[in-house]
Amino acid sequence: MIKPLKKISIAVAITSSCFYCPAYAQESSSPDLTMGFNYSVNFQAYKGHKTYQTILPVFFYDNDKFYIEGDDAGYYLFKDDKNQLRLDGHYDGNSYDPSGELYLLDKRKWSVLAGASYMRITPYGGFKARLNTDVLSRSKGTILRASYLAELDKGNLTVYPEAGFQWNNAKYNQYYYGVSDAESKRSGIAAYEPGQSISPFVSMTANYKLSKHVNAFSSVEFNYLSNEQFKSPMVKKRTDITPAVGLTFTF
Image (cartoon, rainbow, N blue to C red):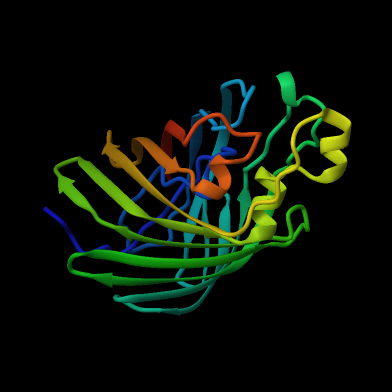
């Protein structure tokens, strides 16, 4: 059955293909500390990209004022049973280390995004919007992500489907998918300057309660590239996919 989303904690699968990937969720009325690890595999849409694997620690804490959710942390401006308005900052693992025919292009580096998010919680699920900007000036870009989240509960197993879209402004796309004139002259790859884009995504997270203090989770997110991204000479396919698994321990 679909339940009201009373409280969602999200461990981020730190990959280069997604803004954030839900990997763990739980309901709790107390500010317990949860720790664990997250193993993820990143299948990017870039040309010449090798499968990228990471094993990273995750932390969760929420006292209704400050929170930590994986690599996401912030402050509640307002919170009640139906609304959550937050200032937040999180790691953006989008990156690319050129290889093969693209080896003369510049590296695309990870960054930190900061901004605000709002979630409306209803009996039919949660509706979330999040606006963030690159604060390390890697891309100097901005992202808007809007999605619907649900909670399907069956005993010790809880499943969290999510679907939505992500808007990237032109600066963000230029950094991660564009080819500058200087890169073009150096590499022989055609110059490319993408504009803003809107692309859909879907994800699914499963959390299984092994004991009172231990949970196992798995997740996968599919991102479908927009035409602005897919037309880039850096890209070879329409989708990037990030599966993840892990364990968490609550103290």
